[in-house]
Image (cartoon, helix red, strand yellow):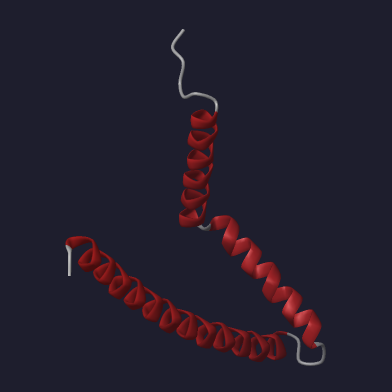
Length: 98
């Protein structure tokens, strides 16, 4: 087997390992998501025992407020904005000095 075949085999093995990890992550995320949904329903029943939709709306409101206060979320958005700005600069020929 030549070097190219070896590299392709290694790449294939690495890709397979990544895909297996991705599938495991997706399964764990799905389980977590379902668990969070169940907790939300339980909490909504406690918040508003006679009106489940009203309780769920209150939970969504709380989640929105928390998201506004989340500095990590802000940092991630700022990073995404910066990446987008760099992409735009590259599309238009980069930075031009005056």
